[in-house]
Image 1 (cartoon, rainbow, N blue to C red):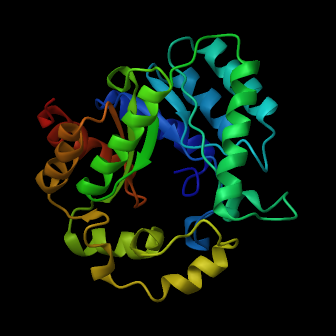
Image 2 (image 1 turned 120 degrees about the vertical axis):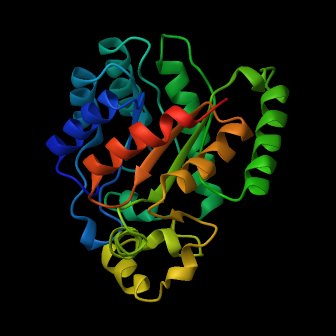
Length: 278
């Protein structure tokens, strides 16, 4: 959530979360916030290094596009540096990119098939540049369970074709949610801070936070249904997270979309995390 917090506060919150039972950090590699209300986006690699110094769990970018703002060689160098500094803790998440972040240096913004092809080419380059062993896996966001089940099936099929065992490869989830002391505040936080969570259309080609801001005026509370849990009840959130645990995710990174991070960390550390079961 580097779009929402000063980088120093993001580092402090990461350490605070670890003190309350959270085990790792996924940091957004964004150039711009989704909407202007969120603020600014800090430089992910600087923040991850500071997180590494102030925590003991895993850490990585979720996700970096090694194709437009970033040359794959620079991604390999940045990631390898973190891996050297924090052995066994760093992981690298890669994706095909979104215009909001990547168009700032690219003159031409290609269609999705070309972006995906560029991503695969970049991954080949990064693998050749890495001298350490790689742990391949999958990172995705919260979605209906049947959609993720289908995604897991395709992932397993591709892994086996590549001669790999999908059961040994990490499956990582980024899950947005909104918790506050009342349902009304939780909803207000979602509407103001994370209206993109209620937008039921592809967003990869939108270039400006101000465009998102205008689109956000069309978002209604009911648009979040089935896309993001908004509730003051920790047990409602626990039940939703448990569904993804049961589905087979190895790591789940939680993003409470409001600014009430310390209260959320305390409540989830006490009332949610201890009651999740594999």
